[in-house]
Image (cartoon, rainbow, N blue to C red; front, side):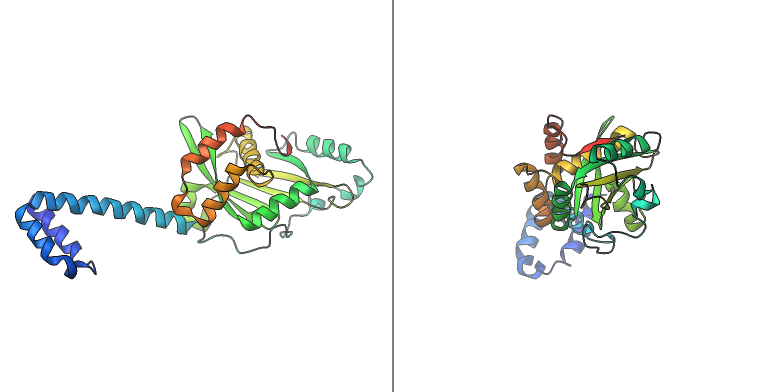
Length: 261
């Protein structure tokens, strides 16, 4: 744009501002004495406003077009252990035997699996009720990809952040973690099955996301709890790079929940 055209466009935008009349005199004086400085100041302020609007849009989209509200831990339609295996045939087995059977059953399938104690499950989904949506950083070849996760009943759904921003509720899920609670009372364990899109994730990447989720929602690390709370209640202060910094510490910690492919 020429300076004149830019100036006209800037003035047009300024006049739409509700505070324009209040500062019209000062604006006119600066425009006459130093038009280039005037343009620089306005464009600098415009960049500040654009960044603010971007943060506000990012804060709002997490709560829009989400799945219908379903009490965390509630059984979702179709999430029945009997749809996968014959529950009556394993009820007389020990907890250790069931865990091994669950592991072996999934060895040749395109999914991950895991087990957790009833206490770990209760903590995860109680925290999932408090912080129903969060982001997890997934290491990629040339950096990180942020994955949006959302608690829905006894399930956790994950989709790439960029896909959700673009497609909203129509975004493809890259990983769905389903928790089966049929054995929690008499055996003290909950079985987890993680179904993932092999075109979007490898086994290792799906396992990485599952481990990250468990460490945020099943353990009491002070810094990770602060990130959960900030993401939910102070999104404008939330920094994505803090997630990456935390990921480096996660690799040094034992897994909160046993998971196997």
